[in-house]
Image (cartoon, rainbow, N blue to C red; front, side, top):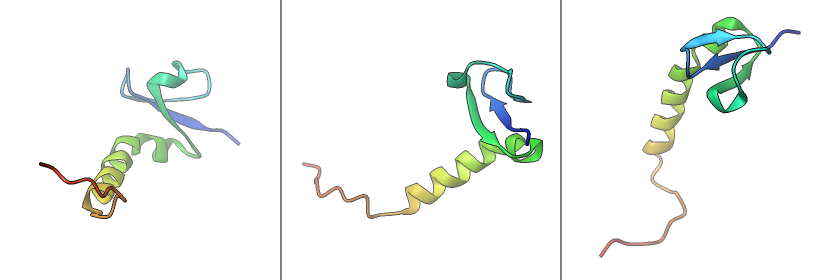
Length: 61
């Protein structure tokens, strides 16, 4: 089974022999999934930002 990564440096989908891990998101099971990596990150960030309950009881002064 092949795996794919999205390279943040080159903004491209790569195979296992691509850039170093620190520059990539993944692995993904398909090229199509890897090509949507930044969209998925944005969706998750929006979802997490929408949650009010972070378990943080601190208050601002």
